[in-house]
Image (cartoon, rainbow, N blue to C red; front, top):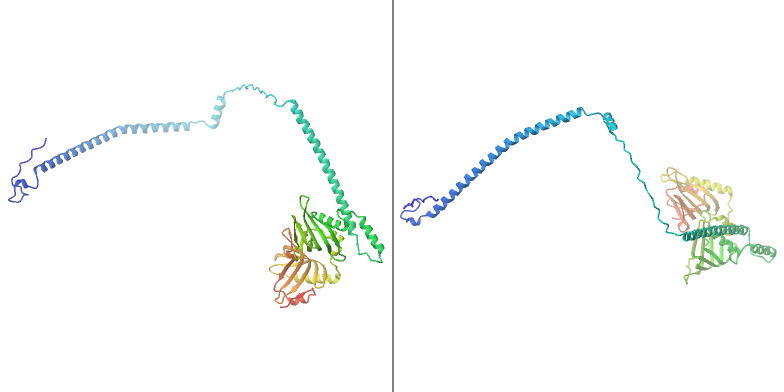
Length: 436
């Protein structure tokens, strides 16, 4: 119940003198509201105190229950540790355990389960099997026939190659000079000897032998169909040269007024240059370049070519003693050791004016290891006023790292800087001194 409000003071100390009680700052209802708030706050405080006492009582009760449980758990743990210690101390060894297991092993007998295999019925009848057998026998007979055919073809090809080589050897010994008016017997003998040789697919036996050399060298897809040999020169006039494709058809036709042949003997390169003519390919005809059309056939053996076409061989009138002297002098100048390496003159075949013929140079590094080999048909030694020596090699190839490469545009230059020009001039080696 609400407490009775105090009687209103007719004269409040907060009210100014002379003011009426109805104008006081603290009204009666405000005092009642404050009293109710204070009573509610007191009730909340009492409720909190009761809650705290209940919580404390619950904590004391739980502590009284947990203590016996902790003691019991500790006792159980001690007992478990003791039992484990006893088991470890009294555990039997591996040998005892194996013996116990061996004694306790039961004997087990397994009876095999009977297995019955039922093969499926054959889906192929006897007639089909017999037909397959006949087909296999027929295929085997065909294979035997094919093998016999291949053997016969190989034999015929071998006989044809033997006949071709025999014809080439005979043509190599034939020297068909131009017939003279007072030497009719010699001309008749040459014509009779040429007529006795196989034509090898062309009208001119000499051109047939030339085609045979191309085929033996691996260039059988090129064939001379027409041409007249110019006496004393490595030139063929009025040439028709056919180029065959892989399908066995003519791929191009080359026509020229003349074909100049040159053989790079040291590098094994045959060069055929065609001048003043045309080339027909794919139904189109185009004139040959003004500087001529160059065909290169690498990797040829020069000996049969020289036997069949002696004009390809450069004449050599060198004195052997002079050749040995030049070889020794040039090798002495080239083999001087330098930080970048040195050269050795391994071969010198001849001299022609100021040119060295058929040479082989070997390049070594500073440690004496062979780096490359240069082979050329000719070598010209040039002295520059600046103190350099130039070795100009022509018509040759480079051997390096197991690879053989022909000279680019048939030329290769070697420069030797800071050379004693006086020693070169006094060596007797054929030289070409260039002006400044």
